[in-house]
Image 1 (cartoon, rainbow, N blue to C red):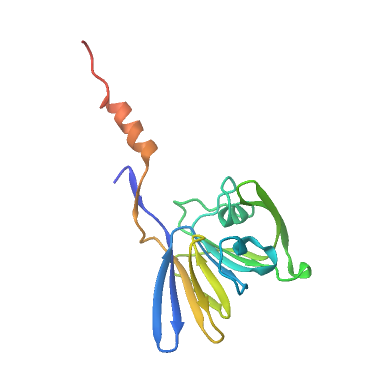
Image 2 (image 1 turned 135 degrees about the vertical axis):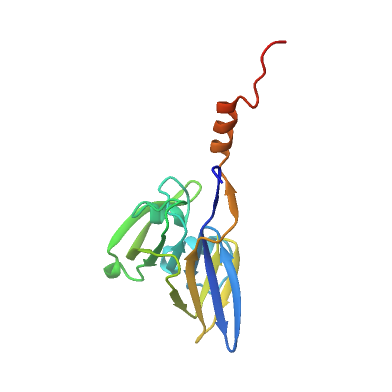
Length: 178
């Protein structure tokens, strides 16, 4: 218990007709308005609509860094962070020059940034493309809605630094004599 914590995740419920499909993201769930599926479209500022983050770290790369430059949220903080991207320059409350990919920085317009408590639901209406941790993608069609919320019920994460500090403090890897 002293070297492990349960991670936050973004839980996604996508309502299509009468069915509900579920998914999960460890770091971010991002909505983009782009008809093409590929990894690069996520960082075209004109297509970015919203993101829900479990952590926002200014020293990271990607959506976590965008949020972190505005409102840092650590992995062990109880909250998540919601970003609504500006669709027009006049909508931008902030402009963030963030590392969106290794070696690539962009100016990103932010219309809204706010912490969200665990369980607080953010609804994303279609038509949009949802991407989870930059990988898995789900298309929302006209009339479909995805409900996103942050929960602390994800996988257990081992703090390697704490484990090794404990090992060093107790002499686990040290012996004396020959």
